[in-house]
Length: 114
Image (cartoon, rainbow, N blue to C red; front, side):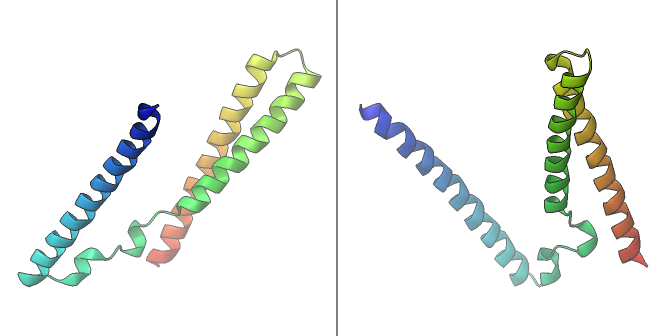
């Protein structure tokens, strides 16, 4: 009974401790750099280095959804088994949408450079 309470408490305390130490160390490093006269622009993320994670995750989710749908259709209307149809279509469409995402990000990067 005590373990059921202590385990989550220890997990959350550990996570809080790790995040607190990381944030405080990062803050101390930044303050030390500023005191030495370093430029504050070191801490800003440049536009060309940011990734559009929401687009990537959204396209992956759409690819998985279409893969499940097409896998169901392939399994119903062909001689392929369910064990083959679903994973193959999920991986196929997920990969296709991630490749499309890479092409979109490449086009956006080229557009920003102009």
